[in-house]
Amino acid sequence: MRLKGKVGIVTGSASGIGRGIALAMAKEGAHIAIVDINEEKGNQTLEEVNQFTEGMLFIQDISKKENVESIVNEVVNKFGKLDILVNNAHASKQAPFVQTTMEMFDLSFNTGFYPTFNFMTAAYPELKKSKGKVINFASGAGISGQPTQASYAAAKEAIRAITRVAANEWGPEGINVNLIAPIALTEGVQAWSQSAPELYEKMINNIPLRRLGDPEGDIGRTAVFLASEDADYITGQTIMVDGGSIKIY
Image 1: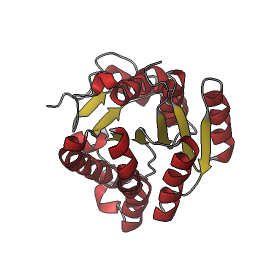
Image 2: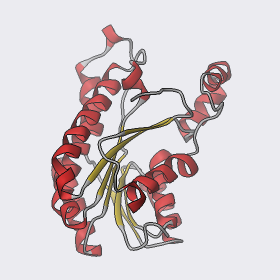
Image 3: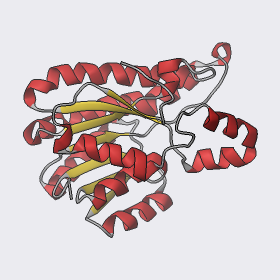
Image 4: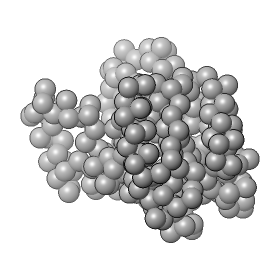
């Protein structure tokens, strides 16, 4: 119960990596606010979280700043505090560089970068009180410059930039701000593996550990570590949870 009594918000947590993080933290005793736009899957994740602790569900469009502020306020009103903020939600579309449009950039920044910034800003007063933890999400697509990922990579690298700035500014106040850059076997990747088995096999062979991460067991447990007191002396770092695919320093 490494997070017993802690209160966390996890965006994009109805499914995939976000769900894995929500469950991993709930099993360690944290109260979790699930934030997503998929009501059906959100309710399913809430039921799972409630088996271990008390959760909340917000079906909200977090591209709107007022919704972000409302979520933070409601969580604090219910539980009295906020200890953990996980900014996982992000949507994007792929296209070759010269076919990437402003609409694609708007989608990526409005669902990933701006919600991350707005949640951090809204949560800051409470995180300062609790000496809390922020976990943002980077991507190997931005670090390595993966083809067809211009809008997604740009937003992810922008998130990395503001994470480092916040780590420097908020460190003296006892707030830790880190990033996870994952590779995981999500529902979407599972569907893709069935439609493109040769490409999937090629991807697996390019991962030194020869497997994709488990959303709960690998990515979720790393998030638990970063949210716990075990990571009190780590901030401003990008943690590659990708089976060794990318090595950075």
